[in-house]
Length: 351
Image (tube, rainbow, N blue to C red):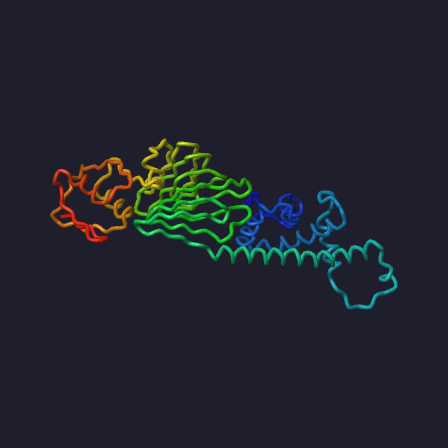
């Protein structure tokens, strides 16, 4: 469905449009949400839609081919048949042709069935909105990680300081979640319902695969690293209408630089991107401020840094730590005598 082409359609155009008739007849449920969105965005087209609906339903009852019809004449007959007249019929008026009587009955049937059809759509849409409105939100505090199973069976491991939200029940034709922070996804494959993750300016779309998404608000970039399968990444650059996209396969990573608005593709270091889910804390030439933020998130602590602690602007920290206590890492960081430290519950004092 190309929604933009319908903005200037008249009722004749709708009657002749294959996608419109398929939606109206319920044979293209995958486009229901697109039509509903378009109708909400284009209230001025509702009268044309209503006329087209009545004609299509009437034609369906008569078993005629739509293109063979004089659509305007069809509408005039249908409109006339629906008009109620209180006047007394003449003898000539009582001699209606069999076709006219049948057509009146069909028109009435169309109105009833049309009302039922749209009532069902209305209540179904209302139910969908109710389900969507009752979204589930799962959070992890700093120092915590959590495993989740979504309504479709997709497995998610949520890293520390992260939030994921999703509906109690996914729609039939799309599975949407929103993420702030970091998570590893093992998505159940469903070609009829793509899995979509929204993280600010970046949207990640898959059918079924495993990958990592890192999108902490304080980071200057959003990263999507693919472990298995294929992933499509869309990013907004500049205005909302300006977008760029890339497709990723196994061992590829997309990086969206927020400030520059640039989307690039590269390979990635597995320890850096997904080591966290196996208890590995990894640093690769990390500056002091970034290192502190990562330690606060990983261990659920808060650093207090005395004024006399001065780190060289060129100082960089690298290391791989598998399930090590915080004091061990602080000892490595401070060598040789860069600072002293004291851990008191969830407060770390550097002096």
